[in-house]
Length: 300
Image 1 (cartoon, rainbow, N blue to C red):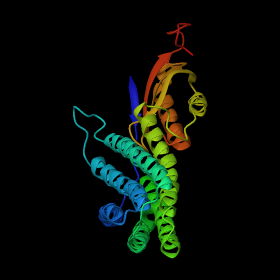
Image 2 (cartoon, one colour):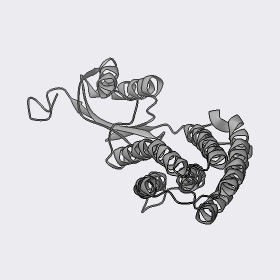
Image 3 (spheres, helix red, strand yellow):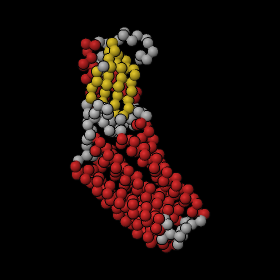
């Protein structure tokens, strides 16, 4: 068996990592404040927004986890290193999101029938602080959002939570002016419904990677056409495309070639084409000379 591996992973600069740690400290600190404030004020909207902010904490933690684990070398027991822990963390994050959002929806539905008194002023103050914290986190992450897909995802998470804090602020203001306590569970429901689809997408994407599905954005038929376009390749079978973690697609396949004497050139051509056209640099290919497989099952 012969394989070719060209590793190319976009890294995050030292400045970007420091900004991530600072954004995580701010967000995690306010998350604790928001949970306590939701209990003190009786605001379900604050609790729902805390669940939303938990996604920011998880997203930033996953990015930092990926950075740290990416620096750890592979060993004899873990030939791919520890990169898959990033996906496991994402799956656990998504599961927690579902639990929080489900609790908020059930509790909010009950409160619609029997609204509970809300400390509107306390709710306003905490929501305003949350808005400021998210604004600072956005500024910290803005410059680094083009450094990697994970960094961009973290920036978008904080941006989405900024909108959630704005919704809580608006709800608190309306309660303060009108005294209508039913506004709080309505805002909580809206935020929970905003969080659920994002949690589902995160869980779906994590499970897709864990099940070794074809990475997003890669067309297996297009990959097969690319391989067949290389001179000397006559057929492809046992083609598998998967990834260990995000941004690390891998491929293995059996190639029928017209002559083993040309295999080195064919191998180099396939590797270059896959890297150039599909951004797949981790490639393992097995050659089979035409006629050695005949019409057996599994040959293409």
